[in-house]
Image 1: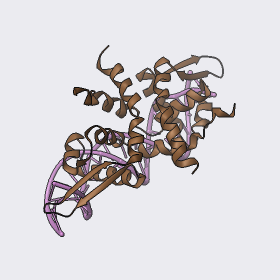
Image 2: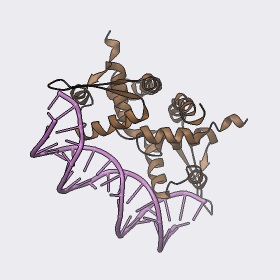
Image 3: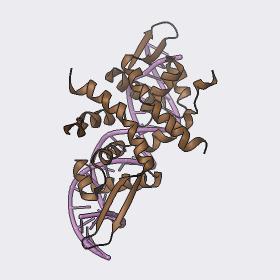
Image 4: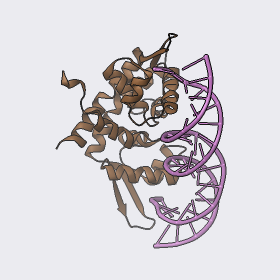
Length: 107
Length: 107
DNA sequence: CGGCATCCACACGGATACTG
DNA sequence: CAGTATCCGTGTGGATGCCG
């Protein structure tokens, strides 16, 4: 009976962190393409500016769902990918994606 | 093999519609409390202004995930609840909520 | 290539007051 | 009670330019 309120505050907290535009979509891209370089990621997320992409990635890094791999070559090569946590989080998008397909794609 | 790209555009579309602050949380509240009157809902979502609450509800109505039941009594009684679609959508939050608990509540 | 710095516009959200 | 109307500050995001 007290199972009705499963600490919604933590959900609210998580929702606030990922609610911004692009955020979840970036995770989804990384999950479906594997790790990507900054530029590639930017192209996949079509329409996002480098500034916002950087912001989102920093935030996702801080949350521990995305890792950043920096190679100081010339030109430099920076790769982003999902951490264990990131994959967990991205998985929760699967039902949402399935819903999106049913609602917006076909009949 | 081509199953790798399950029309991510529809996901992007859905994500954009629900990405705003409060939006998903409102659905969660309605799912856990059942239908609520405007004022009650406002109190549950603690911190939201009536203006934004109205905006969100109109948007959710337009998406077909929330219904609005208006009774022109004095004082008027307006009740909001989840449609079939709304319940589907809200369900996709369950794994997210479970994750939130594990990440933010206890060890 | 992968940013950060800067500038700027605008959408968003909060507070308040008012109405049916 | 359930909004709408208005005002207004702030955040957010886009564009551009420069740098290691």
